[in-house]
Length: 275
Image (cartoon, rainbow, N blue to C red; front, top):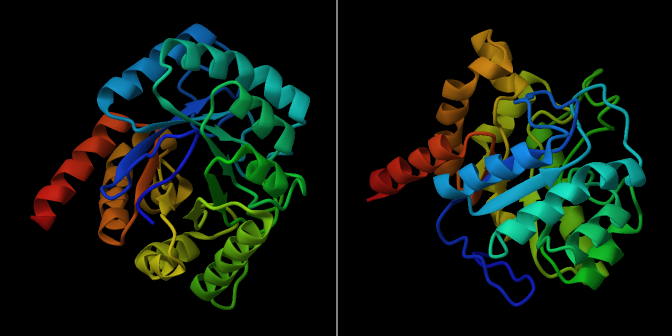
């Protein structure tokens, strides 16, 4: 559970690590002004690595509420210059491709990416699971109710924790059937959930450890923070830090964040708290 295998390398998750978000999208919910500028993204990648990021997650398709899906060709146009530049400059860095398109996953891995991060859990592109299996790289599978375009219109559950757990258990079975051996699970904070659903999942996050896979927590600057604190994403760092500590206490192996330095500080404090 604590080790992933990719291209002959073994990232160790026995201690929590940080995944830094590197958005090559023009319409992210939290825009720091780097989209479309490969040089700026390369400098930001360097900063995140220096701040302690173990993985950089490169994405070219926004999945904020209301967003329509992006074609593979458009996504490739956005991400491949970034993937190529970052891999060339930092060949030892662990790179992840944040995509729901199998074509994008394949080309990114062939260009140096080591992990595929799919918000759809293989639902949007039926070729995704066999493609990842053939690529022999770790797969991060997330829960989402609906699609980005519809997910926040009226998210409804009888028991959000039980239903997300069942969904992720099914993903594990589908991955195993496809031949994917390394799977990381993400309950999908903010993807087809109300604030109450998100906090119910966070309170019970530790229950997902029973699935026997590493867990990823992605709460960075999301609406579950903004709506409670009545702030916008640029002012949600403090809330992000607070909830990242809760996620660690519940067993998160990976913190996916916009702010690597602050997340690394949380991990250091958590390690001291554990003794």
